[in-house]
Every structure is written in C-alpha cells, then in structure tokens.
Image (tube, rainbow, N blue to C red; front, side):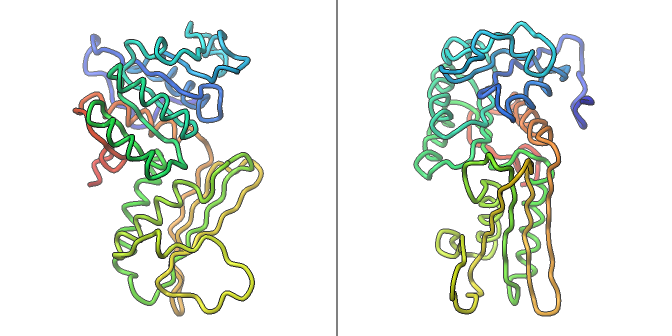
Length: 282
C-alpha cells in the first residue's frame, strides 16, 4: 500500500509520534488500520485489542498484515491502553462502550466508527466527551463525508417535486441494516428538509403499499459477496433523476479517514466531533 495520500508532513525530526491503539485488530477493518498505521511516519502502533476468546491473543499484531512489529494482541483493555493517545474502534456497540469506559478513565481519546449504536449508547459517547476527545462518524471516508455536504445542497435545491430513496450495498457479513452510512445520509437529507427521519423513513416495501407518500425517505438494502460499501441517494423527479453515489473499493479509505481523525484529535480539547469537523466542512 502506498503512503497515505494527503498525509501531513513532519515539520521537524523531533515531532512526537501519535500512539495508536486498535480495537478489533484481527477484523477486516482492524487489519486495514494496522497496515495504514504501520506505514505512517507520524503514527506508531501502541496496542492491538481482541476479545478474550480470540485464538490470536499473544500473537504479534503486525503479522496480521505481513510484518512483525513487537506489539502483542491483548484482551486486557486497561493495560493495553496505558499511555495510548487514541483508540480507534470499529467493533460492535457493546465492545465500544466497554472501551469507552476505559478510555474515559485513562484519558485516551477515541475515534469511533462503530455502527448500530442506539440513541442511549450515543448519549453515553456524548457524556464521555466531557472528559476526552471523540470523533464519532457513521463513515470515516473522506469521500463519503464530502457526499454528506453535497447532500445538503442537493436537498435544498430539490426539496419539492422529487422523491428521495437511499440504496446501499455491503458484503454478506455485515450484521446491521441499513448501514450507518445510509442512515447518516438519511439524517442529513431529513434535517435539511426539516423532517424527522424517525417519522418519515420507510425501510421496506412489500405487497400493496399504495402510492408513495412524497414526504417519505425510502431505504433499500443489498447484502452479498465482498462488496465493501456502495451508497446512492436518488432524487427522482418528473422527467429526470439525480443520483449522488459513493463506492468504496477498499477498506483503506475508511482506515485513512480514521487516522486523519486521530491526527485531528491531537490538537483538540475534550469534546464530541465528527468527520465534518475533521475535514473543516462545517
């Protein structure tokens, strides 16, 4: 893998490297993060976490991407996070909250890409952000977050006379639907239109549904194969369709965005941030 595009250059040879911990280090995203961290000049892998039943505990984390690094995979969250700067977490809600409590106690910042969190779980992130810096986003891709911004403009211009549908596709192993990114897109559209997504979202159609309610935002989900992540927001009017699409071909795009978020947190006080803050799009 080539060096991270757009990676900031060190301004001096004495710049302290950011110490990164990775949760779920043996998973698909964990391995992508490991590879990107190990190839970054301004970052160093500090810890690699896995659940207690993993057969990889005690193994060198670097071997997961082809190069030993001396960091052993551990299930001891508190010990692993000692002296870390940032934990990057793309795991499951239950694991993320466990890691959150440890990070808050130890003063370790977090980059959270976990999807499927409930409103109550998101509130726990917000409470912890009183003490640590947290970047929480349904998708860490720079391109997807640019799409979020484009959706604001499109939704303002196409507020009347256009039916809005969101179509997403992911690999067969994804456990939540719709994807966090699709929901994030729906939230951007609904907020721009002055609607409540909880009230206007339609997540499935079957049988005699009647005519489409123009105030709704529809979601369609595809699961299959090894699709990394495709998302399209369709604005369907009379005589024309506008589609805003993002397609990911590699998990490296999410990993590189997460590392950009980790660098951002180095310069920020405690608080809750998202990728729009990281990219200066607000």
